[in-house]
Length: 130
Image (cartoon, rainbow, N blue to C red):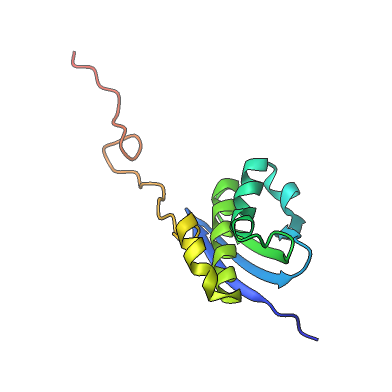
């Protein structure tokens, strides 16, 4: 009696999400807690559910995600990409609509490293000529 599971991996900044889609009633579970309790903000909740909403599959799949690293916002972005990739495993015909919505693009922006001789990545030390 093994259920059909589809898997997708998502990354954003330093967050990594492993996402499983299982046919169900639309529950989203992140690290063993429901998404509203884990994320805390409605904006992030909407972001996580956006791939399912765009394909009109919102109440059809349960989402189970395990996320490590980064902050809450980066984790939400990683889950969104993981859901999108898992949906491709469900049906490859979703690719065109997911690509048009920008859900399959990995956001590669990460924090720039600090350089020597500077206070932060780009900001120099305060300077007075006299």
